[in-house]
Picture 1 (cartoon, rainbow, N blue to C red):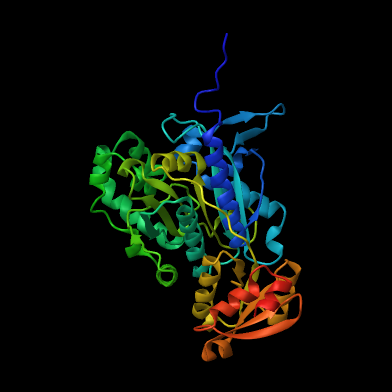
Picture 2: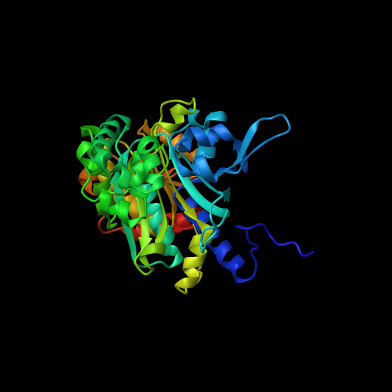
Length: 432
């Protein structure tokens, strides 16, 4: 008897290996540039890790998880997604006790029992990133910027970003009440799944792909109209920084994320080169309450996830090929005052577009503390921006290893910055 691989799984070989390695290596390279560190979690967890985070009312928890009991009767589950495991690991290892935000990425297999179809398997490989410990809207735009850059580096050209805010737990509760009141006379017309969602997780109805349900909610209340002032302000700042990055977006009031843990910013990228039913590339959002719900501190977080198998399929469909990697240098952008963030963000954007490994101090501390942290974490240079630099249109570059400092006019001396930080070391000082 010839044994085949289980339904919903596949062997990976030939050109698929080349594509797969290119996607993963490209992601790891980009994560390094944006200063995200790898975190590897177990393939299976205690079932409560996922039921608590994803939500008992979701299809994943109710229908799709591979759950089993070990020899001592403990309920374990093969991970259906990455965020819950990352949150559990950060709390268990007290990774939040050091410098914030904690910026990590993961790669690995996920498992969901669902009908296998093109681009969707029961075992699938996922890449994701999470930033834990700041509610600064810059990090929201950075996560989106990182994901857009990833897709562009793979060769996707006609990208479209949909973005929305799901609000905080307070204003979302108000919206859910309005939405259920709107749907009450129409519940019996919803599909069977959405009738169940009406009681368990009403927001999931927005995620239904059946035309009848889409039409029934087309004129429903929109969540944006229920946002509190803090959530509206946060969302406007996220859009501001996306504008600063020249990332085009469409605010989609019907966009939701199916997991219970999402709050505030949510987003999704699609490719306009692909058919509408199969054009989603990846997305994510903010989850400010999840870490506290897991027994950790009350700190916010945001992240995204991408399915490697699906991206591989779409790359082949569009005849996209691999590119070459570039050399790296490492620089830390230190903002001394909140009023300097916009100016600093432009510098950070320039450095990352040059593929330098760099990061920003999202939570402002004393300069000496920032420099010590940069030195300890292997940065070669620091770009220091305070009120004096902003007024003078300059950036102060400090060679951390050689203890030398330079002033560079930002509007007309960018080439000096390139010469200074390219291939950190002796050549940097000789080039300026």
